[in-house]
Each structure stands twice: as structure tokens, then as C-alpha cells.
Length: 140
Ligand SMILES: [Zn+2]
Figure 1 (cartoon, rainbow, N blue to C red):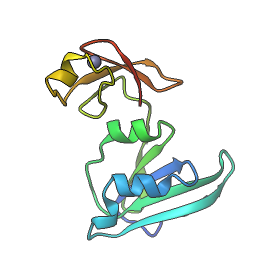
Figure 2: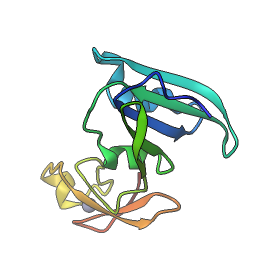
Figure 3: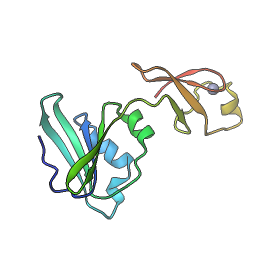
């Protein structure tokens, strides 16, 4: 177990697939922030063999939809006074809006350049979503 005593109040993103921590770190814009953040790579894990972990010494609004889409196996720990007060297990979002693009060239969203298309999850195992306008499946 990695100790989280270096963080008093903030967020720890746990169970990141080894090698994926960097992507999530950048996607969250953590490489640009002014508060304390840490990306720890290849921590030995009983469950996963190895894992990456991100510590954020700040209260921020995480986009759980985006995170769940990046890696549905993540755990987000909320830390207060050096203790985990909440554990959030992420999962693939049922519906996502404004993240995916429809791949059907004849779709009205492509023709009219609509960007906030809502996609609905139909195949969680393969991360397949369908477009609200034409039902074309898209892999997230
Ligand atoms: Zn479409």
C-alpha cells in the first residue's frame, strides 16, 4: 500500500493502468497547474501487478465522465485531513455528450457540424456508443 500521508486535502486517483498515468495527468491538465500534484508510476499492486497513481493536493472538480471514459477501472479517493473520506469507483458513462464525433458522413450532425452530440453506451465491453441522430456505433 502506498501511503497518502503526504496529502492533506485533495484527490488521489488510484488503479490507473501502468503507463496510462501520464495520459490522464495531461488530459486533466495537471501538467499546467500551480498546486502540488504527483504522478507515481509502476507501483507494485496485488490486484494489478503494477499501477500508476495520481495525487492532487487541491479540491478540484474532476470530470468523472471523461475519466470513466479514459479508464473505467479507476478509483477516485477524496482525501480530507490526510484520510480518505470517499472512494468513488468509476465506470463507463451511460451517456456522453460533446466528447465523441459521429463517423457517418451522411449523419445530420456531420452535415450541420453539430458538436454536442449525445452518445449512448450499447456495448460496455468494447466501449461502443451510438449516435443520437443516426445510431451509428462509435468506439470510444
Ligand atoms: Zn450520427
